[in-house]
View 1: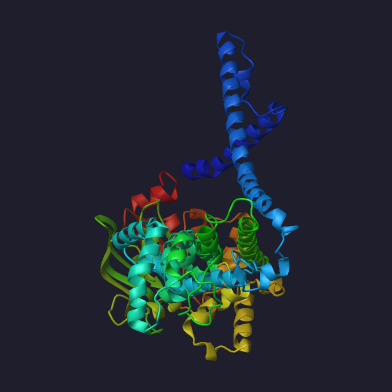
View 2 (view 1 turned 135 degrees about the horizontal axis):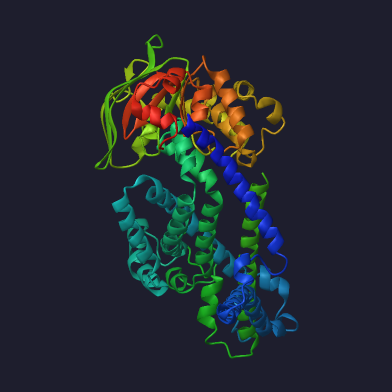
Length: 348
Length: 258
């Protein structure tokens, strides 16, 4: 009996102790923060050392805080600075280029920057090229990437999982020019062989190459997102009798959808921004594509290919920078829309 | 499954290993129908492991080996022709931390129906009725009937835990396993869940694992005391607490260890 009584008293003691500590804290914590009382009051030899050491520690903390703050702010500053410098190069032609008008720039398909008689800067074909290649790449990469992420995260055994993750990271490390080379040689021949298309370097080729480049990113970010879903959700679903597949599409995909959308967006970002591989794989023809076997040129590839030939400071040079601003704005809009979509979900 | 079997769950010679560690040693137990049975014992004694055997949710981790048999309503759940899905429909589980899914209250309650029935069988009216009945049964309907679209994870913990019980009910389970269902709750929440368990008693067989001996004493009809993977004593709760037959049980219920 005594044992049980002792146990029932125990929580009371603890509660009282807790209150005592709390009130002591209130009494001591007048200024910068709470310090254990006995360390402050005694005056002696230790006194001289202790404040100095804590001074160093405090200074160190302040330095670290400063570094962190600077890096946080600089991330924003760098983006703004990039935008500013690109825009500064483009501004003169935007506000007074000789052959430049904004509407044709955005909505004309005629891109003849070096024409002797009639210079025209229409980027619609390039914009459409960028979007069509990206869209095709995502149509291929999103199902594969998310499927692979689900497989790696939920279905395969631990050893296979490690192997797959290493291989996927290896894929992500292949330089884009190598992908372009594969597109130009291997993929182009395969496309001609299997489809009978007259040219192998086209929208399809660029889309496949970009898909191959985006899949590793989508898989690794998507797998992280699924790994972040609390295991208790899986147990809840399993204990209700869900099959593994039901668990995936009824529990995991909804729970991880923000992370999965982020994975897809990073894939889109990679595809929109990719230059060298699409330059080599798409055929690089300024052309509004009517089918997947048409050659296209993207905004990025256009800048990469022509900036070297355009005389610095010329209208052509500045229009290419303006193309950069356009690209920047497009990706910004895509990200913004995605962000708003996520916010809408959260509110629900 | 045969509802006229004398006990809801019986085990015979049940052994379980995690890798090479034996967590359950020759467990023979018969748990009665329609009552609350508490499983008590110090940490690591195997009570949660035993509970998780009853719906085979243990098996999701690799390296688990089981021998012996477990009969739920007379049927051995390790028979090859037993469907895990049917088993888990009949044996629901409530976890230590409330784990409603991150969807609406409504969808949480009908989750079981949705995964076990094709879409065309589930009319809106049927789902609505199931939600109202389940939430009424756990005493949440009054509080939540206007907030069925709220995210379940935004509720208070006590409501979340009740919701976790409610979502089992549309599947008409025979047995509800509760793994320390009150350990994340405050005094009021604990009381509410305990009252709910007492109300559910009779319609369902409830098996609760608890660290809290006072709780076991308050709510259970029978009590199983476990130690080091073995069942030391299984009697009516009052008997186990007042006249324990085994000296280890006596020492534990008097708080000398554990």
